[in-house]
Image 1 (cartoon, rainbow, N blue to C red):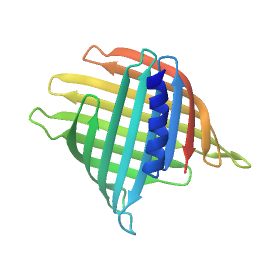
Image 2 (cartoon, helix red, strand yellow):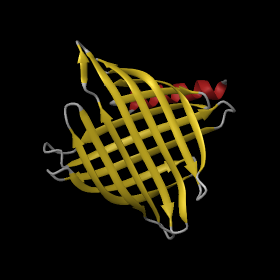
Image 3 (cartoon, rainbow, N blue to C red):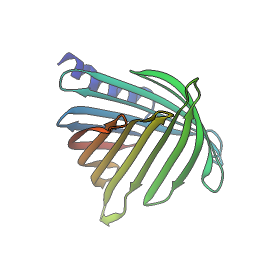
Length: 202
């Protein structure tokens, strides 16, 4: 119970201190998930930007997992560019470098990053988020989000994750159904987490 209370207090603290642009909480059948994100342009043309993400999970056996990543991005007018990523989490830290695509339109957004870990034994990853939010009626929108992450090295697949959100949006308040599916190792040993999400865009 104490870890669960710490988990929610940490989420609120991160949202307040980092001046977050979004906060999401998900209660699933296997674990609870929190995600705080913000994006800061460094110039008027939005060529240089910093994206930060802090996420935490806590399963019902009180095993926490925390990850923080900071992405320094240079994006051309065409939406293509380079990224340098610093990350730290429960399983360690590191630095990645890669190429990204970023498209942000009225009803949809896409960010994709192919990167390599700058270490003695390199690791390769793909990370992407796609959101589709078309209007429905009055102040209501459809809210859908698909997040993909895959990590592998020269020996094969290490870890992969798919996060799916489907629900409604009213004036920046989003809620609905959530599903997460992960796989580990070359055998793709899978686990899932299904439940409800609540998200606020600031």
